[in-house]
Length: 257
Length: 310
Image (cartoon, rainbow over all chains, first blue to last red; front, side, top):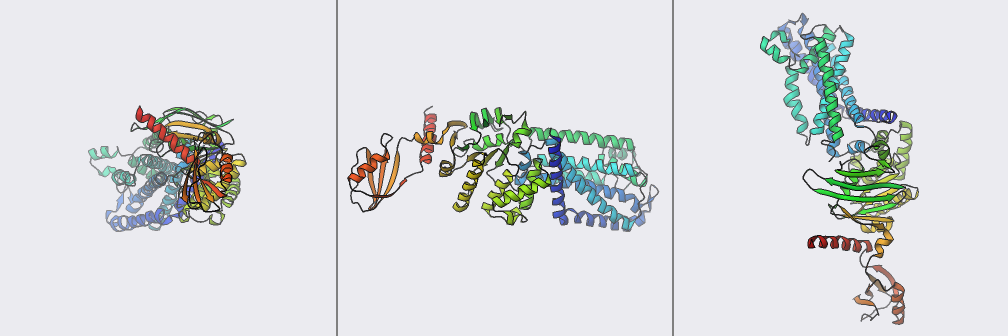
């Protein structure tokens, strides 16, 4: 493989993705900022005052990492699925398919675009959170690595969704019926220690729980689950989803006739 | 050296449609090659396989000796494609579309900028470089697709009906441009439904029908197979009766327009000699139908009849 060629190609895809995100910033940056501001006002400030503390933290502080992670996850996923499906729909995906860039570079470029948008929105939501509460970072490396790995996982998932999608409806099914419920039940707003034992067990089957909790551990130093388990799950998902995406591209599923 | 070599190429779609039934094709480097065929003949499938947009069922495809499966980077680097359908990112700017394409081929920013300017200027789109593709006219979109296909300076350029739906002025300017880049060394494969376009531009011709190549030869050789021609002569003076000419069938279309059917055994000199004897002066002459069109229809029709007989 020509590494120099593929590096330039990946950089080009990333630049294209970022220029798209910034060109349509009203659709990509503003909505999550508004939604998260509402979450902080309603759940954190108004309802949170009545809840008091959770795991020894002010409720606003407790939910902030989860809300940041939620915005990273949804934006990473949303960016890749809409961009890649849009390219398939209009046909300009062919620009990449006929070029000598490798399948891995096509995946990496799009995933990097998703990660950058996820992190950009995550940073914005963090800045909004700082208007409402104080966040001291307990474990910076864990915070950064978990948010990065989570963003990669959901960018890859968005890529696979886009590969299979045949119409615009298909790109909203997973976010609506899978991603949103798993995120809300992933410990963003509560500690699973509050749940009965059976539901704690069920919650542990939700991968987003590990991401939210590991990220919360990075910031607040508290978690419902083992950080080692969280890393194992995150790295496992990255490997499995990248392999799946690569296999689909190689076979040309949904892309080549 | 061959720019493109196709051996026993087969494609069967999932629905069982056998689009290509084992085609063999060679296009020499530097050639201007017309790949013709009726709708659904397999042209676009063949081009799709060559450009990696369609997975082949069987066979070998080499671009300048590089196999598209085992040596795909080198093969793809040699190829530029202008597809049949407009497949531009309509929300991106003209300049970005071309420079992104350069990036996908590993061309650095500095060189890409130079190439973008060069090709957008040559295709008269430089003034529109900051406009989104959606705002361009149909002809401009086609020119943008050509600029995009050329930005990495491919040795083989495939154009799949590049002038479909384009007005005659733009079509002619595209012809001139394609002839210019062919003269500079780029091998061109053209598919088109405008047969006069193929006749005036291309030196070799391949006709594909029903997933098989039914003709592959020099344009002059193929046109030489025409059994006869029908010529329309515009006359200087009015005639009231069609003249009797030995070896030719004549018919008056109008007082000053004579239709002459000529067989392969007679040449045009014979015709003019006989017309002179009759004192008929000819102002101009044209073929009743495009020669390639006539031949194309004959070849495709005879194949259909043969299949019907089977």
